Length: 278
Image (cartoon, rainbow, N blue to C red; front, side):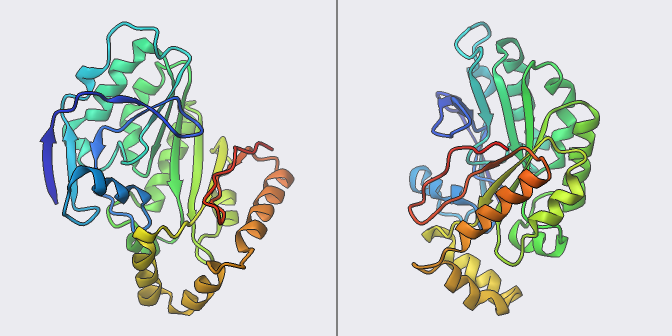
């Protein structure tokens, strides 16, 4: 793992995300090393030659770049993070995310965070100081053996679920991002039934076989789920309507169970749908 401390010129940048006006990424790269991570495209711009998951640049001056007194971000939404995990293991040492949160409190943006790490519980005291704060966890599988294969250094399934419970007990609004949905592997109904008593809303995203991850995903299937290789080829063929059917199934299930849900499926045009609320 190559760790490098860097200084940057800006930390709050305009966002192209449907749910955020601005985004903050405390790190470049991510130790979790998820096989499906779209953020590996960042290597085209950062010059890293190491494999994704084997480098992290630490933006050591990140919190210093957040202004102390401004109305620029009041009533605006800020997302932490979009191309890294703000609570990846190295956060235990650098506490960049915590420092950033401390500087954001006086600015009172609409804050949302996305993570796979139970380290997020450390900062409950800070979340409570925001008038509008949402903490979201992403989760693809309930089987920890599979989790280790696709997300090597992420927090275990049980730790994530316990973290969601603790956030709920602390009255911090929560969301569970069931993403990415692996066909025949991700049992999203089972995930919902296991967590619905302490999750406020559910988000869904299907596995998108970007060219940068396709070979790695098929390698994972050949080594762990060889019986699914041909099925995936059919699902991701030109004429498949698999994801349209799956999207309808999710919508129907959420309506029936009166769940708040948002669907961000990638279809053949790679278009991301507008959020759907039920």
